[in-house]
Image (cartoon, rainbow, N blue to C red; front, side):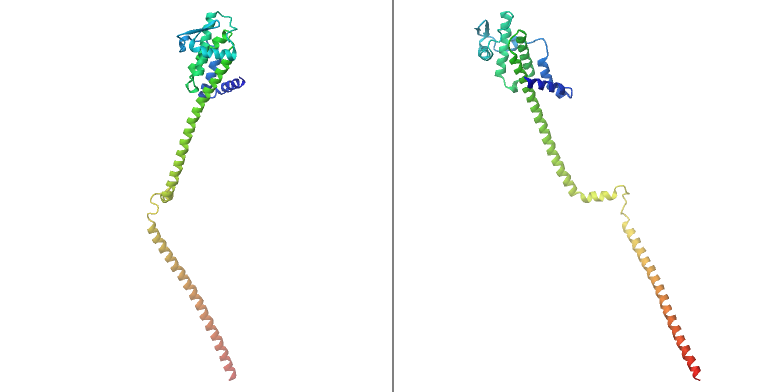
Length: 260
């Protein structure tokens, strides 16, 4: 019971977060809501036909196994009721019909409308002082199970979407690698043009010829300068030789003059 109360509190707090959370907590809140009962005999099937008397009350034969099971486990849950036998009998029958439906149905077959119908039948019994708190506690447990089933289905849907997204991501990664591999040359060429005139490189051959001519002219100037330097160096050497020969000649002439 405490676990159900804790779950109700958690869902109530989470209910303000989103519409999905609100829908989760809404069912438990409806079970606890103090609303006028709308349940009636015609909401149940199998209540017609042969009836049997058990104690002070008359029950449809179809409910006899359910009634016996309730009495065996919890005793006569209507024994403390102070209402008239006719009213008590009517409430008792609808309560047993609700318990029988719980026994006959599986979780996947449960709807919110059915849970609220059971709620009304159980609350009517509680108002008549029936000792059926166990049924209300179990109804809340069923509601929690229904919520869990819905959330499980939602989780599976999300997991499926995640799986599809992962597959799509993997395919996109492969396509990305394929594009990079097959288009590298084109993308490199595009990189050369980005932010530049698209005529870039069109006059490259003419520019190369101009560069070659400039290089030849520079080599010519370098050679000319080297020739001039060489000429100066050679003339300087000739002058030095001439000066040396002149000094030798002058010295020889002087010696010859002295000898005479």
